Image (tube, rainbow, N blue to C red; front, side, top):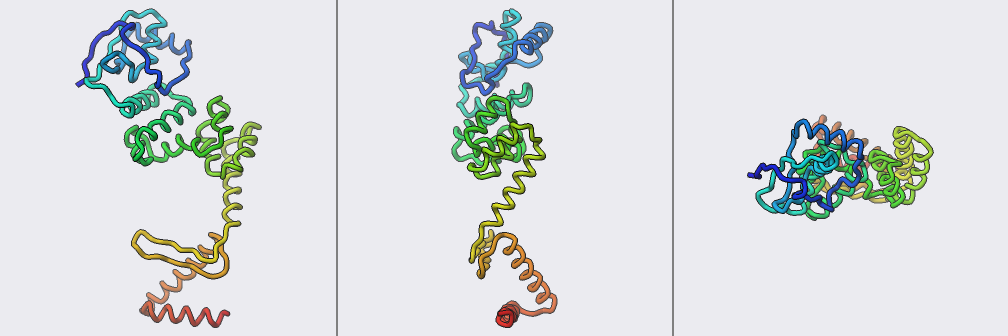
Length: 264
């Protein structure tokens, strides 16, 4: 179990890889005055004094001249991945990180755990998988979007909208956002662009492997998703009617083939 001790501030040292990069002095002073009255949460640190979680408390205490802080010392050296999880949980729950800080920290955490899926990061951080998807969405955006996120000109939700578009179409969306467009407007633009893009992609043969091992193949004139959906729906309706009439699959397939010949 981690040991709880009072340590002089000089014993503690910040972690250069801490995800939080910006600290507002006015907020630190308020926190420092609060710590002067009562420290509600100890600082978590490595056995050598490196802060794992609680750097804001340490900075605030230093700013107002407190001599010591209550610290919880880990009983073993944590891995980089373990430290990052602690830091992200601490910051996301107690002092909001900027969108840029959330993205870079979570992206680094995923790199530290090469085999992780989104659900693994979500479980480690106690977040919903959809939240992790949004936080990591800037990784799918062009550099201009990432720079705008860093500079506070856009937010994570804006980047999530942009990440749904091909990178060659993201610059126009960024210009629209910087001109003052709302998030709802961005989403409407993205939805329209994706719909237009999807309708231009057509295939003469669509092969759809299912998790059951069955493969559904639709072949004929070139089709987009709209035409594919229509073909599958009409086929499904016909099969259901045949099932109600107790027609076996072999007979149904022969009937469908005969109807196709007549249509031609």
